[in-house]
Image (cartoon, rainbow, N blue to C red; front, side, top):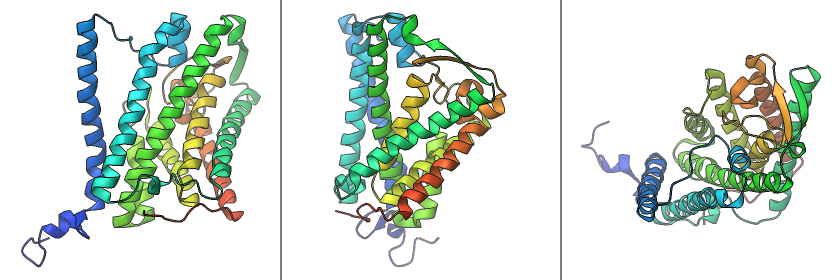
Length: 321
C-alpha cells in the first residue's frame, strides 16, 4: 500500500483519531510483559539485598505447599499472584483509557441483568465438564482412584494447599480472560469483525501456552479450541463473567480437586489418582487438555453455551463506554 495518497501511512497507524485497534492489540501483551519483567527483576534484586531467597520453581502450588508444609511458604507466591493481578488490571485500565478512550468496565465487567447467572453457569459448567472427563476415564478403566489426599496429609496442609490453588486459579482466570477475550479480542473485532477476532485471539491464547511442560501438537490445538470456548462465552453474553467463571472452574476442578495435570503442570489434587490410558485420548502428562477427551469436553461446553444463549439470556450488548 502506498503511503503517498491522502492520509498516507497515517491511515495505517490511526483510525478515528486514535491508534488502530489492531496495533493496540499487538502492543498490549509485550507492554505488559516488559513491565512485569522489569518490576520482577527489581523485586528479585531487593530480595537479594535483603538476603531473602525466592521460592524455588514448582510445577504446582499444591505440590509446593504439601512439600513445604506450612503457611510461610505461601507468602511469596501469594504476593507474586497479587502483583500479577494488579499489573494486568492496571495495565489494561491504562490501555483502555489512554489508547482506546473507553472505560475498563466496557470490556465486559458491567453488572447488568444476568451477570450473576452467567457467573454461576460458568462455574457449574466447568465442574460438569471436568466431572464428565473423570467419569469417562474411570469408566474406561484408564483412571484409578487410589484414595484421598487427607488420608496421608495433615488437614491443615490440605486446606492451605486448596486455598492457595483457589487463589491462583482465580487470578489466572481473571487475568487471561481480561487480556485474551477482553482487550485483544475486542480490539481486533473493531478492525476485522468478530469471527476473525475470535480465531486470532484464540491462536494467541494457544501460543501463549506453547512453552508449557509436556506440550504437544494436539495440546496446542486443544488450547486453541479452549480459546474458542471461552470466546464463545464472551460473544454469547457480551460480558466476561461467564468465561472467567468457566476458566476458573475448569482449571480448579481439573487439578486441585480431581488431581489431573493442568496444561502440563503436575500437582496434587484432593483425589489421589493415576491415569494409564492412551495419551492420545487422556492427554498423558499434559492432562485432559492434551487429549481427545479434553477436546470432546470443550465441544460439549460450546454446545452448552449455545443452549445458554438460546434460552433468551443476554448480557449488556456491546457497550463502549
